[in-house]
Amino acid sequence: MQGTAAARAVTTQQAYADVERLIVGVVANFHRKFGGDWGELMSDANLAFMQALKGYDPAKAKFTTWCQNTLQFVLRDRLRTHRRPEVPVVHVEDPGALAAAPEPFNLRKFAQNLGPDALTALRVALGADGPPERRKAALVRWLEEAGWCAARIAESFTEIADALVH
Image (tube, rainbow, N blue to C red; front, side):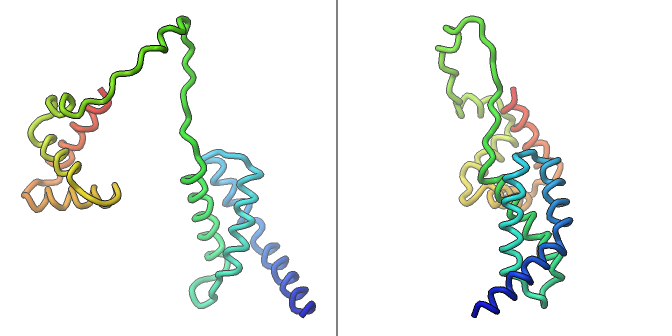
């Protein structure tokens, strides 16, 4: 039994040595694009390597491809689950100015300023079920079935986006 564990450890060490440059490269690329603590990223990448090694099936891909895909998935998942939104620092000379609560978003008031196409798109979007990426696809499909061309859909979305910004 110990011989098997020792052989597995040697195999794991050799596999790591074979892809170590790949791991560092994937982490460096991720770090350059998204930032983050280098040590934490390397730690997550090493865990991803072990996950890739454990789940590797030679019939599906080369190990380097499998490892790279696993690394990227794990690091992106980490970004999605661990990243906190950056809050801008505001310097205020009058601390009493912060006491006033911002005006809450008023959907009716917002909708009154939209054109008829944008209002229709907004109503369909708010009535759709499911996660946002499915709602967008369902909304586009519904509008296309209603006879809207891509330009009309894009103009409506742009109008909604512009109204949200201003």
